[in-house]
Length: 328
Image 1 (cartoon, helix red, strand yellow):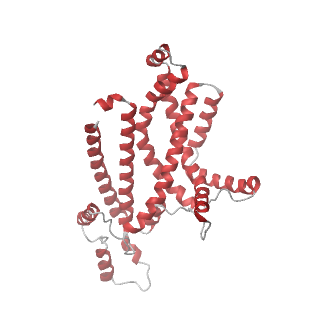
Image 2: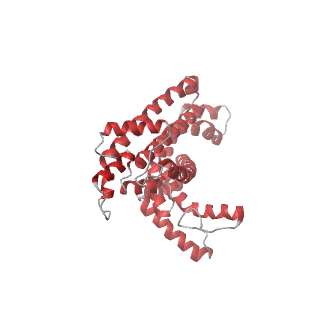
Image 3: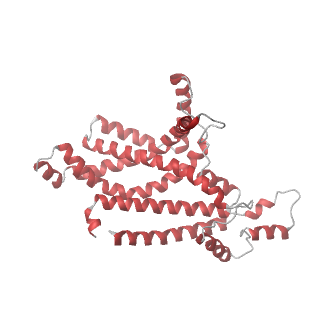
């Protein structure tokens, strides 16, 4: 087990290094920080612009590999450099990381659990009304872009506030209300009400994917010999399904977990923008528009590390479900 995880970790570290390097190379080649000075009045002299860009390690007159070596040396020491305005990249991203991963982790937990439960139930009742309903809803959600889904939730939340609840149960903009001073529980309640709609926006798409995947893997094992053997030894059908069929069907779903985490980070970019959450996704879009190479590269590194952690979690879950992995 330890050897298995050590090999996986080494592979993942190499992949993170490659992904981070390619992300920096792409950002440094495609973005043009020099253009930020073109529209200033008065226009700064070229020598001043060169000096400023060199100080930020953004000068396109410096060879790309030399800029990459400077950036990589800082990253190894935990320093992602400076933004186009000269402020440290690390300071801004520390706060934004908490915002994004709080939203993503809650969406991941709810979406994956809901998807697994719906998919397993649909497989057990194959071609029943629940199977047909869940299939139709899943395809409808999958066909709907995140932008459309998020805006629909805002409209539905606003209507529900006005016509059903008579007060603002669903808060549709920001992470919290400005100037709120209602004590600990009031603050918790306010943050939860801001969290409901963005979480649903992320969870629904993930639940739709997991439910389809879980349904198919569950159908593959429902008629297996080991399920019938477990029932022949005295287990009830529900016990055999939960302890044997579902556990086996979860193994490929656990492997799929890491890939959906990366997709969820992408979906969070649009969700943050629409719901006014100031996280990594919003900053990534802003950084591309401002030609902020170091911030774009830093967010790519953080995303790669996050996917690595999700992959390790998937490997641990795989090992917990499959004894053959632990034995190896």
